[in-house]
Length: 281
Image (cartoon, rainbow, N blue to C red):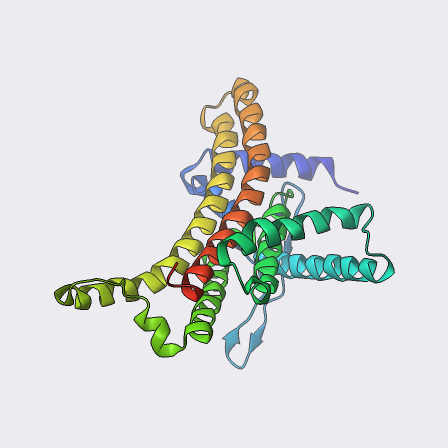
């Protein structure tokens, strides 16, 4: 049982923290990663601290949620695959996933890559669903959004970068691929500049993928916490009548943003793959 006196004290301490100079960073505290799950005002669940060969590989809440997302994704997709062995016509819950898979195939991969899109489809589907699961898991109270971690988004963007380069090199050959980066008809004097610009462009594309996903997922959470903080900053409970409805609206908008960001990351990755594979287009 939870002691009502200790619970009330915990709530009071939490409210007091937001009104002091020490507690002014409480928004970032909730957005950033940590080594515990904060179930305020009830308890804090600390994660184990692990050292291996001198390296700190301790668990954090975003890592735990990322593992959970990967496990859920694996379980769901295995279930969808098994359902096709029983019947080619999906039913119920599996029908939803078929709709999404067909959407990624017909509306993202096929139009942006064109011929030969099938070999890139597994990666695009994996990226789409992994980001989607991460975004939605982050909307659960007391959870964490691992797609708001720049290390995670940078890793995803790196995978896209590798797939883009390998796709372009495999199709056009190493020399043909890098030669095709320079537009036809460029004056000789501009070629050195274009080489530098195009080389930097190879890295700015995945950089944009990483920053876009990270910034959008982080910003939504900051806005929600900032709206709730108005109640304590203004020292007036009447602000709850304004802050809470707007925060709920932003929260519902975050559901749309979660789906939209998975779509944007996937379609841009697919578009960059198509540009690398078919450089003449």
